[in-house]
Length: 210
Length: 104
Image 1 (spheres, each protein chain N blue to C red):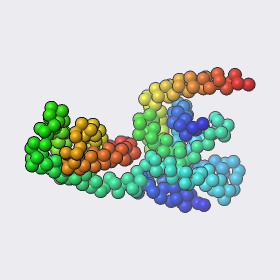
Image 2: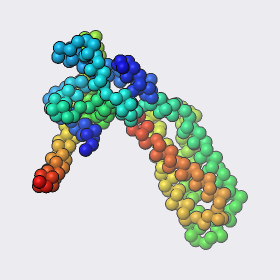
Image 3: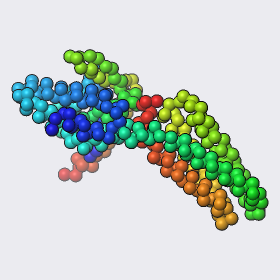
């Protein structure tokens, strides 16, 4: 194995943008290693062979690199309008929720005081998340310049908070009567929690590039 | 024993002797541990870059024999972090020695 084949194998999942810095460091390390072996009296061929061996297992190196640097998958994720489509989906659900509330105005008043207070929580959540997701959508449409890190941190935090708050609010609501509201909310909130969790490794990598 | 977990502290300790580059850091750790700790590139450089990202070390680039070299320097924040790591390690190793040392 040569340095080149080792490098290609160890960085095959790493994004192109990360490669120059990584190549520079590893190449310098490799050349330093060869120089040290030559100084120790080894032949050029033997020095190069030893230096390649000292690079270690490329599979293990690849795991270390994938943990720290942006991968090709991360890069695709950053450059696809995931958040955009999430904002639209959430806005549709919120519109549906508002529609249900409008055509069933008595839905929240038939359960007594508890239902009324629950309805207030829901109404507050609905209006606030509608406003925030509307704002997020507007920011994307207007292409306001903020870094990918700030952008994703804002969206992931919002989804996590809404998800947790929504989950507790839903447990207060009598489910059989509110199924048309309950199911889409539950889906969107739980997917929000899952989405924000999946963003954590990417946010950690983007932090240094913010 | 999680050797990878101790690598950041070992890097910081190595850099207390002055600025250094990746190969030199790896060799110093290997030499001082009598060959027991031999971190490969796949572990060393992600750890170096994570320390740089966290502001515990800083990097500067210079041209040396036609090659661009990155030299790492310990920052004030890194020094404070190292002192904390040292205290934790001394407490931990003291506790383990207290148990294992008396086992014989």
